[in-house]
Image (tube, rainbow, N blue to C red; front, side, top):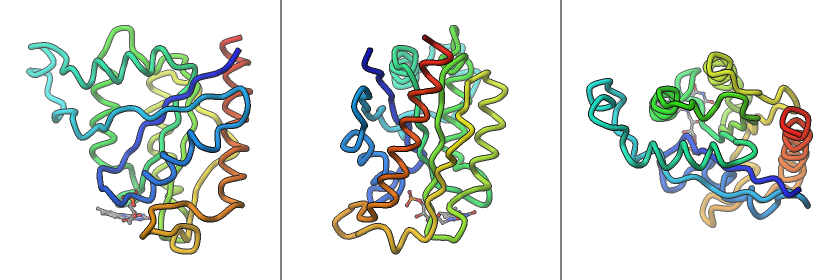
Length: 185
Ligand code: FNR
């Protein structure tokens, strides 16, 4: 069957390099895979159990539902101060409080983009740690860490221009599809 993956973006800025990659994924999805973007996590309030007790906010419920109905999740995020952005952690924290918890048993691939040399590698391992607690099936390889972004993007036209990077993204999507078929045949 055709697999459906959804994309969660960890940057809120309009010209986000990670956002460019997120929006490229549906265009380069290989045969047998359909990819769509989740709504912005900008609409999630700061996590607060008092808010949760009054009712889970609609954007959180909507995102959780979309993740539950998807075969897999791709998280595309910048690295902030050697970790993940607070807004992404906030989103993960909200999602973790729902029942059923939408990330349990969910195949997940991580992608990071940075103008720096090592492409957000450190953020990946912080994100992976939270996903281990949430019992997601995080894809091990290939690890997509897109560094030296200035050479690979046209940031005026908001386009990923480097073909090798696109090919690499397709390889990871195919690996996520293989993992998905293994864990949820
Ligand atoms: C950064 N940036 C950054 N880059 C990196 O490779 N490692 C890091 O630890 C950090 N830390 C960091 C902290 C904060 C608060 C900001 C705003 C930025 C640079 C970052 O990779 C760059 O701004 C990216 O362009 C952000 O991703 P988007 O928004 O373009 O997707």
